[in-house]
Amino acid sequence: MKNISVVIPVFNEEENINILYCQICKYLDQLPYSYELIFIDDGSSDDTAVVLEGLVACDKKVRAILLARNFGHQVALTCGLDNAQGDAVITMDGDLQHPPELLPALIAKWEEGFEIVQTVRIDTEGASLMKKLTAKIFYCLINYISNLQMIAGSSDFRLLDKKVIQTFRGFKEKSRFIRGIIGDLGYRRINVEFVAPKRFAGKSKFSFKKMVSFALDGITAYSKLPLRIAFYLGLFFGIVSIGMTLEIMYIKFFTNEAVPGWTTIAASVLIFGGAQLVGLGIIGEYIGRIFEEVKQRPLYWVKSEISNKKALKIYPRAKYKYIRINRLCIGDVTNEKS
Image 1 (cartoon, rainbow, N blue to C red):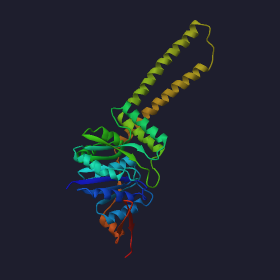
Image 2 (cartoon, rainbow, N blue to C red):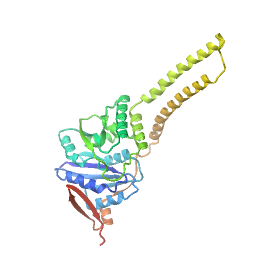
Image 3 (cartoon, one colour):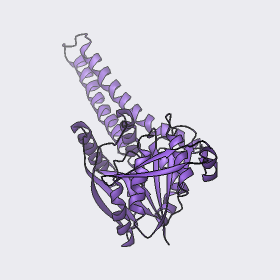
Image 4 (tube, one colour):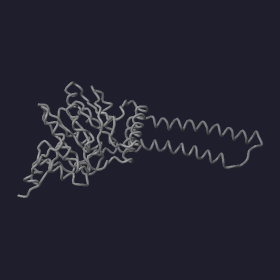
């Protein structure tokens, strides 16, 4: 029997985990596969770890890996892919915006022979116009300045064959842009479109700062064009400065119009100083990433992995109650004292 691994990075998602678990089981239990659910707790500060301990105690198919601190979504996702053992691995977020009802469709495409089944978000319920616009601009920009050809709306909800996982594990860079890595691997792939629902509970952890950092990781990982732009700007302003110097010398020696003033000097300082700072900033981004790579530190480190035996010691008589309301399975872990 083939085995499916589902990797779910979570960060402060205590309110969503039980619902997500029940929904995944609801759809995978209908299929002729064995499966495992791997939750990666990315340094949560709420009771996410406690909820995961309850799930592990009640279901041997569930694994929970607790990272020592918050490493970020892409690194947590990598940790899950490193630990997955299935013939196919499905990655999805823990906020229920990646619909579990799509799982059978992804697996069906895999059975047809596709080694990468990539979901494409065509819309997000409740998303602001600004967020949709910036996402579209990002995909247009990265497709233009790099060799990648990414479809707007590509997400981290995808199925990967085990041979793809083996290839992926060979990528060791620290600044991770997994969508770019997967998009650059090749293999036989197909896209599946979906509409992302609103978060079931909690708030998005993907702040504007994190979105900018994510975009920079993608651009600097797959394009040298910013460096070339800095070079072209330097070349352009260098030519302009030579022209201005020749003009000043001509006015000084061949005319009587030379008037001491600050306009030319101020304009020159502002233009050339600004261009130099832009160039230095772009170069600094790349040097910073080189600095992170050459230190060769581990990409992440694990605080602990919750085993079924360990969790049963915490929940000696834990029971999992299934309540079905409007076809929604809601889990409630109870810890009964003996």
